[in-house]
Length: 172
Image (cartoon, rainbow, N blue to C red; front, top):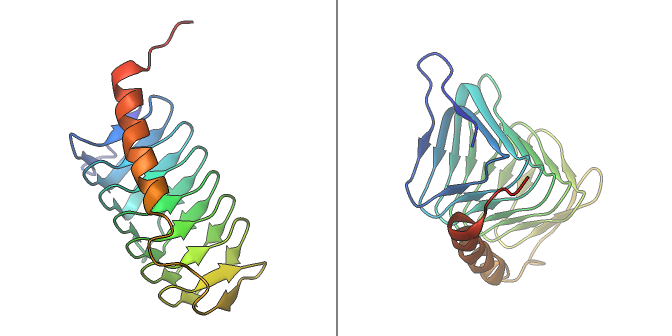
């Protein structure tokens, strides 16, 4: 797997985390226990930090970057769907970030909230706990998310990471 230091900025990856060989991790990135990062995901922390909490999965094609004044923080037990883009935002624990969604600077997604697939959260958008953000630009629907709605997907990716760590082998 391509894991790079940038000058004195080195990734910290928990030994139980799984980073697919085709993902890229650069700079001040911190991956917690049982995190999984899937093919073609890019986590680049070149002048601020990225933190990914325990058991969170960052799915295929996702890009996580930072702003010069904005770290990107993703809590524990989150699902970050395919081809999502996160930059300079905070995602609290137990959130679902839908595929192809965009979260920009100063966005905060509170615990248990859902960002629908394809939603665009412009600078400073706040998604309350257990709310759903959907659309372009995103509209907030309070109370639309279900407590624990992502639990099965979190566990599926923890299990899938174990399967890949044990059995993935390149054949060509």
